Structure formats: structure tokens, C-alpha cells
Amino acid sequence: MNKLIYSTALLLVLVLIPGCQDQTGVVNSPLNEQGGENVLAKKTILNQIEEVVPFSGTEFIPCINGGAGEDVVVSGTAKLKWTEFLDGNGGFHGRLSFQTLEYGAVGQITGDIYQGVGGKEKQTFYAGPTGLPVSNNFTANYHFLGPNNNYHEHVRATTTVNANGELTADFYTESIDCN
Image 1: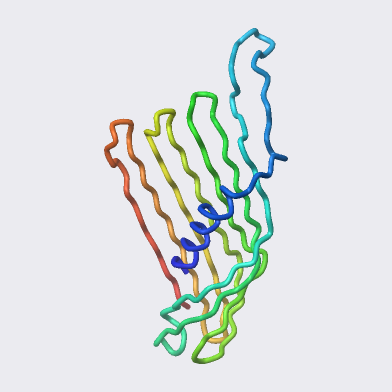
Image 2: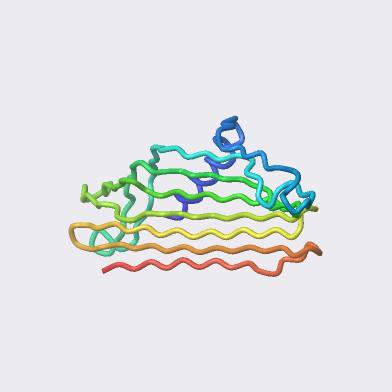
């Protein structure tokens, strides 16, 4: 599932999001608060998009087809929410949420049908005022309920670069459970 997850997220971020000019989520904060404090904003939303999108792709699931594994075609719809904002200190934040509304898969060898349950991705991104530090956190959970077994995949990835440009965290874990 991770190829589908990363491909979907990357495609949406690189192609769909920058091309959108939806200004409905833009919040213009007052420059002066009641205390006379001159601030641009504690949190200024630059862009906020929420859409229902279709998705599809092919994923190899190793534990189906009697343990031999097989490619499955996954398809469904998901609610995509992208928010980008400034934190008032010059930092840039981005949040991507990809929550499936409905999805399923069909085995390409066996023809077995798998019902998707509870799929969700979440990604957060931060870049400091000068471009550093930078942090990126990603999590994904997917479940497929099938005729002979159930499949669960959990992915977590974190990357952090400090203000000196040094990689201080680079973590990736993926767990797959078949029962």
C-alpha cells in the first residue's frame, strides 16, 4: 500500500495543491491586537482545501492467495484536506490529511474481493523562517478484510533537519499483519 500512499500524496501535493487558487480559507489577521501588540498573526492560514477525490492503483499484498501474494487493484474515494499556514514567527506549516470514505480491492489472480476499512494518512510539514529547521512526519493505516484473511498495514516516517542543516532524525517503519 505504501507505493499507492506515497504516489497519491505526492501527486496531490505537487500537482493539485499548487495549482489551486481557492481563497475561501484565507484569513487576514489584524495587525494590532487589543494589547497594542504589533503582530502579523499568531496563525495566518494561507490556503485551505477540502475535497472528495477518487483514487486507484495497484498494490502487492504478500499474504493473500494462499501465502503466495498477489497484486490487487485498489480503488475508492477519500476526503483530502490540505492546510498551509504561517505561525507568526516566520515558520511555514503544511498539513495533509487523506481519509478514505470507501475503498476496496480485487485480487488480480484469484478475483477475491477485499473490503477496505479505516484507511487514513496524515502528513505534517514544518520549515523554519530561513528554510531550516525542517521536519516532516507521515503516518498511514490501511485495513483490508478478505475472504480468507485480513490485512493491516501501518507506516510511519519522520525526517528532521536542524537549523545547521544536519539530519537529526530519519525514521521509517512499516508493519504488516496478516491473519
